[in-house]
Image (cartoon, rainbow, N blue to C red; front, side, top):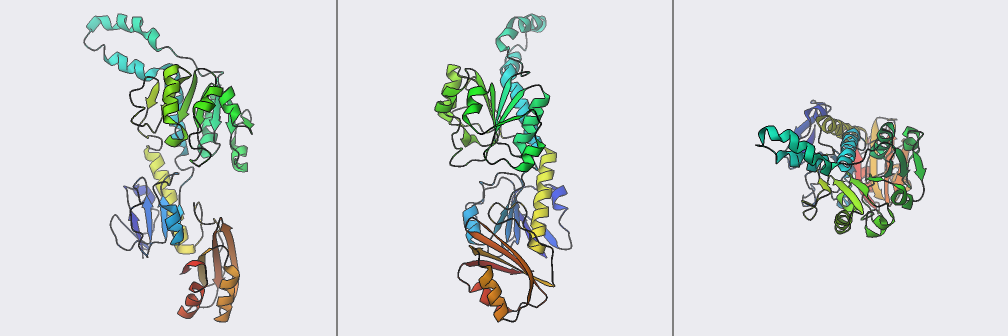
Length: 385
């Protein structure tokens, strides 16, 4: 039996993907084989020796100490694309909210309560304070063309917008999924210069942190509208506040509001609702459960954020998996051979400085052979399946 620790409320539809004859799911255990987590922080959590894998039911994984997990041979997964439609729908909502001043208009209407028959006249008199442009024919810049960026670009095209996309790492799959009318640029400056609206869908890295800043906003059209449903730190908070106050930026809609942004006219603060739909939570939980079970039962890796993603059909009665610093496969094979283990087939790969090998054999792998593999310099984790 495998013990699965859930650190948040995980969709039952997702957990039901784990065979009850093989898995026990619980919210407390000292010896989990795997963890499924949504937003709970694991940075202060002591990782037990039993822990083999962590699955983040969502795309972002900054709540997981990935480097520390890698050092311990713990495979970390995320679920890219599982919540993409939910985020896309909120981005399109944000597009309209940023254009038509809907939020302040609604707030103003609430102040009219109690004026009886005069409300109609007051509405007609005051509505001009909340006018905003249509999106038809306007240019939307999409910064980051992953699963969400592609969906947003295609949806905006269907709404009659001109769309420019930027992503130096765009995949062939993403290109194939894009509407043919979407233009791709190799120059990120184009997005700031040409866009009426700019939406962010990039991961947070050293190169993207604070990408929306005073210098880049200075290149933009006056009255640009910025949408951030990706990561709060992609936008320099002080710079966007100043841009909104001066009118350089007509509106900033964010799913990651900070204290200094709250209450600023022109900033639409949304409480991180991007993936908050029952469908999204189910999709993420199902993907997380599938990835965990695949790894625990076969050693195959899909959507890991720290180990090589490789898969292999089982070719023998016993499977050995090895996580190591760099590629130690030749040394592992030699150690197995020295212990009379005949290898039928294997597959290996390296991601950054971490190697992973899946080795199949018809021989039983005894303690002496396992100890010989573990003794190889650089080997982090060894598992027999």
